[in-house]
Image (tube, rainbow, N blue to C red; front, side, top):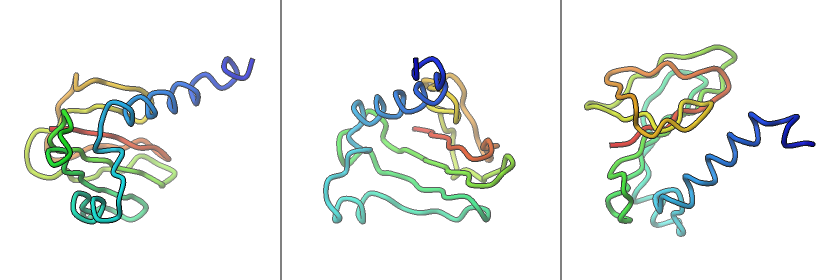
Length: 116
C-alpha cells in the first residue's frame, strides 16, 4: 500500500541505492578516501556541487559529478569543462542517454548525477 502511495519517492530511493551498490565511488569507506577523492566546486547559492574521482576506486565512471539544489525553484549550475553524461535527472535514472556541457538546470529541491 505505501509503495503505491509513495511510488515516486520509493523509485527515487531505490534507484539511488542501486547506484550506490553498482559504483564504488559512492561507497568511500574512510575519511582519507573522502578527502582525497571528493572535491567541492563553486556553485550558486542554495546548491552543492562536488566531483568524485571514480578512477581511483576502479569505478566504471572515471569522474562523477553530483549537484544538489535546495532552492524552491530550478537553478542553473555551471558544469566543469567537458561533456557530462546524465545518469540521474532528479526524478529517475537516465543511464547516460543525454550529454550536457557548460550548464545543467537542476530541478527544485532535487539532485542530478553526471558521469564521464
